[in-house]
Image (cartoon, rainbow, N blue to C red; front, top):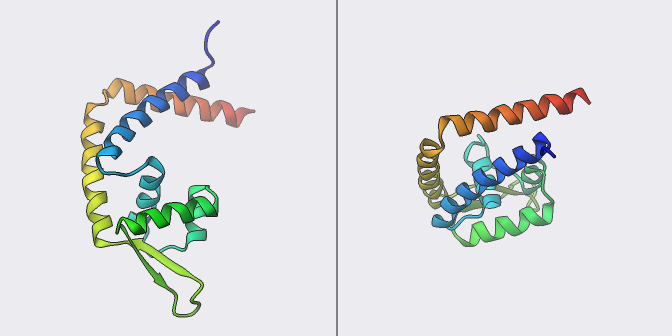
Length: 136
């Protein structure tokens, strides 16, 4: 019996995630923490925890735990709003920006090692799966 395309796609995504995770280990980041830091890196303004939760699609308690760990590692700058002290505005610290620079450089090196055909196949399967889902 042939595997459904979605199973094959998920296997390919898992392989790429494993490669990314190995690089993140060197920078002492989890994949979830990296996603959060990427969001902050490319945000034009500091973000609130609730905004981060919504944009990443994860629970507020999960965001709070990640923020606490990243703050303890010195990667975040957290300021309280002047208008409402209950609101925290979160951005990358200088150390956080440096860690992201190194991490992104390492990931760029990985990108070069993923064969063009492999990456093309993954993207093709993602496109195929998304168009099949839209049809249903």
